[in-house]
Amino acid sequence: MTDLYPAADERELLRQAAATHTTASRDVESFLRRLPEVPDPADVAEYANLLSREERARADRQAAADAAGLRLDSLESE
Image 1: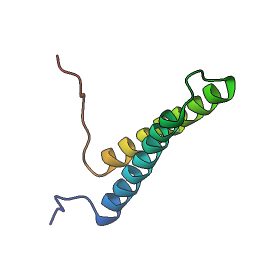
Image 2: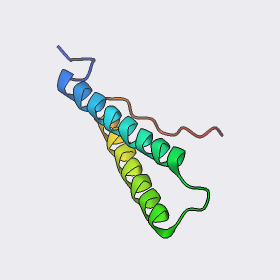
Image 3: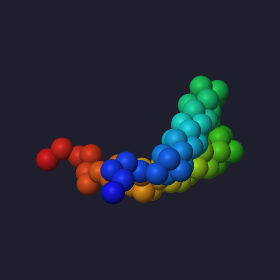
Image 4: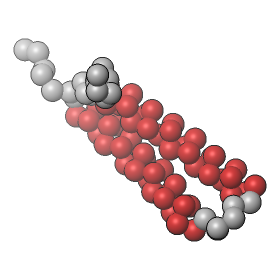
């Protein structure tokens, strides 16, 4: 019999990847809430690092979703 649903471990990996992405996004939000009116070079560098981390987490979440059978061809409307 063919299993129509992804294995539980794939779903758990996806949940973990989603949680990691959520944390990274919240870290960006937290940074933006405390950002001074005039950012200095250290603020710009921190923002770049946070965005990079968030993007990696998003890519990992998407890869986990693909592995769990939630592959989307495109989210853009035509």
